[in-house]
Length: 225
Image 1 (cartoon, helix red, strand yellow):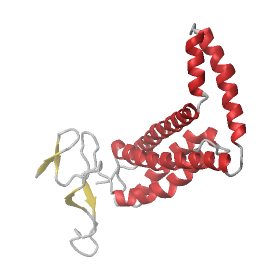
Image 2 (cartoon, helix red, strand yellow):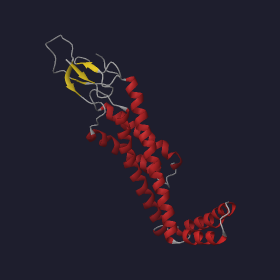
Image 3 (cartoon, helix red, strand yellow):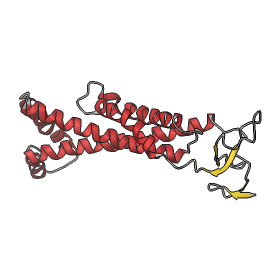
Image 4 (cartoon, helix red, strand yellow):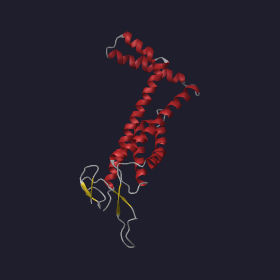
């Protein structure tokens, strides 16, 4: 009996455990098909899509790694400069842990990217919350608001003004822009934009890390007939 591969649509024999054309795994390994003592275990006829994800196991691994990675990636973390690498590594390791929990250990690049995306969502949310809590605590509990205000005043009053002047922006427009940026709404808007950019970058790198890890593991683990 022949079936059709869901990836390349080529005919696959029912007793093949992967597509001979593209290598997509097709069957789940089981010991239930043993004919008797002394005979080797075989692949049964139950079709398994290697692109599907068992989200219960994937979320368990993602939560275990995404939360610490998100804390390391927050804007006020002492190692936040390596934040994108932390999140990529967390997504890749999540795929590894997920594959270890699956029998057989198969996964496609798309499934790895989805696991990485979920890891990035959890990590990005953690990083955003940690950044917001840190800002609130520094301003209202540790009374460091003047430090942030002076820093922002220096950026807007000198660096941004010089850049706008060199770009040929007229003085009236610069004055209006400075007035808005120095207002509480302007400061809050820029902080929010910075956090959103951080989350977007973490999502991108986490997705890439999960996909890359899945590709590397798929090459090293091909089921045997």
